[in-house]
Image (tube, rainbow, N blue to C red):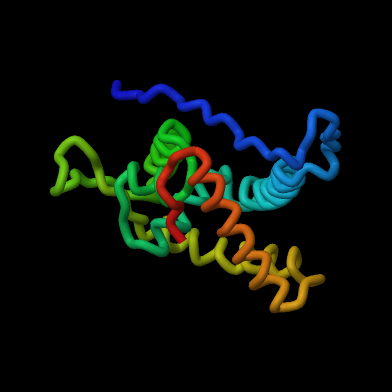
Length: 172
């Protein structure tokens, strides 16, 4: 296995933050983002699990495959930000349920290309309106320009995190 060692990235030094700076977790943006993300994921995970028997990683693969038509597992890793093991397990679970079809990748015989099966496409058609309804409910207290600004800011934060980690910019 060609597992690359995990790089530890030292945070940049900010001279404005002296030795006496106090970290308040409730004000710490990475913490707040994580808590908000976890709350939203738990809410949606319950709905997808209860109604459709899908875990969040499985739903993400279904959604990407619905958008792109087909993808390799490496492509799904890059597109979803999930690790290889999570994508592999989700793909296997979807294949067992016959929601995805696999075929040999003509560009690289060692990998496979995944695509939604007709049942997978039908399932996506059922779930997509629910996903959009949850999104609408979550952002109902925000003005359209605030939603647009939030999306831009999240993309900038994601790009900054990738840059600090020495990784390529995330796909949009």
